[in-house]
Length: 104
Image 1 (cartoon, rainbow, N blue to C red):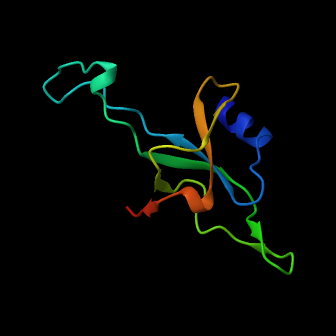
Image 2 (image 1 turned 90 degrees about the vertical axis):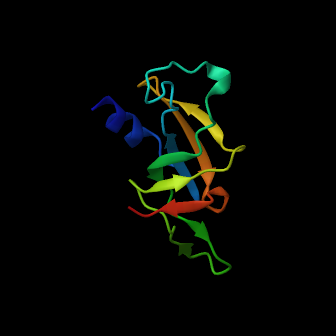
């Protein structure tokens, strides 16, 4: 419930997308705990909020191709880190920075 309230207060502008990165794998299937340096960088995330879209030359909104709840592939670097009231870490990307949408 707290995450939903925090999302209501943070509305991305234009073609920006708020993403919550997937959790890093910290333990192998055999139960071995991986040190932080050995963990792979997480390049997947779930879209939490989106802006209305960019504007074209006529000033009209161009809708985003991603929607809330989509799983996306993220670039290794980039995005702006955002921490909200629920003490979770989110990242703000432009739609054009997102590499792909993962279909189920």
